[in-house]
Amino acid sequence: MTKRLTVLLVLLFLFSQSRSQNWDINLLTKINPQNPNAPVWIGLTNSAYPVTIGVQGGLMVYDYFKSDSTRGRIPWHIAEKLVVVVLTESMKYAINRQRPYTKYPDLVHPYDNTEAELSFPSAHTSLAFNTAATLSIRFHKWYITVPAYLWASGVGYSRLYLGEHYPSDVLAGAALGIGSAYLVDWIDKKLYKRTSRKKATLPQ
Image 1 (cartoon, rainbow, N blue to C red):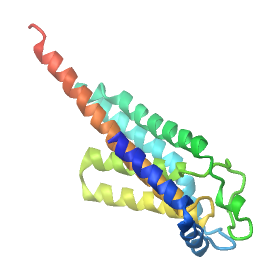
Image 2 (image 1 turned 135 degrees about the horizontal axis):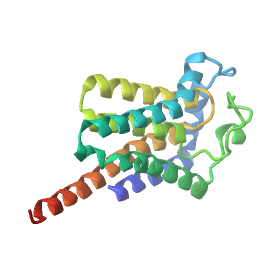
Image 3 (image 1 turned 135 degrees about the vertical axis):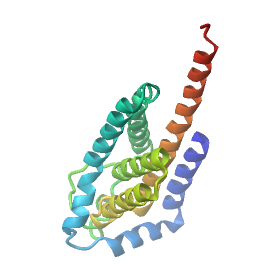
Image 4 (image 1 turned 90 degrees about the horizontal axis):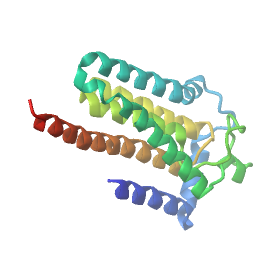
């Protein structure tokens, strides 16, 4: 799973850096207006971090009171977000891609040009899609999954509207967020099963 996620992210970056890079900036200029100040997109961008923290905090409280068996899995809530942050920041420094408004100052109009210069992948988008995927994995309810992914998609679109990222940055962020959620869930289940087996074999 980790290899597939890595390959997908590398392919997205290579595609965006190839001769077809024009699609990246051309699509961005169609979405990003000269004065990107619509409150809905600003609000969605600003919601990425607080909503992520709120959801993870809510899940920790939910697991704590649900049962003793789920209480032991609380550290995975923290580990999951650490995985996303570490992977995102590591890729940013490894790839070292400039923000679109830095490379194309005459074409891209940023809402905020004081953010960190590194662009690929989008941290806001990776956190948003990780949160949506986490809710989908945990509850398997359409009335939770659909709004969660709509919100995450809105966060991703807002990064384009506000001129902060290329489309490939947002796609990579979404892939990273979803992939890391399923990766942590897979590791959690493997370790949880192993712990359950050990408990079952203990002498009574």
